[in-house]
Image (cartoon, rainbow, N blue to C red; front, side, top):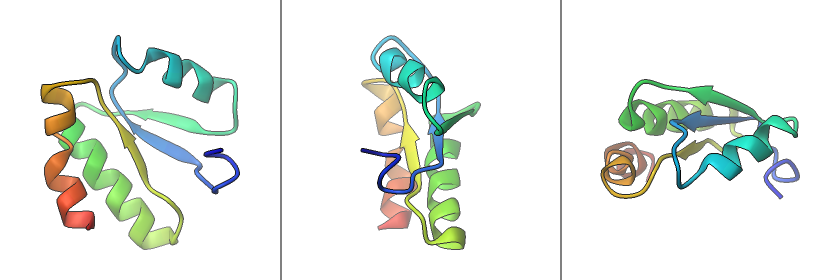
Length: 77
């Protein structure tokens, strides 16, 4: 579905909760970009979307990882 929507990149940090998603990206045309911090992933996805007009996607683990995405998601909104 993500490929059909034009997603080319996912910015994030792999973890126990999303490792199957990361593995699935490796078997598709979607490139998973490893970042050092989830907040950076959300800002990278936002800027990618603004510059290209394509969907910007970020991923994180549950709990604090997901909360770290909040500032970039709010800015994108």
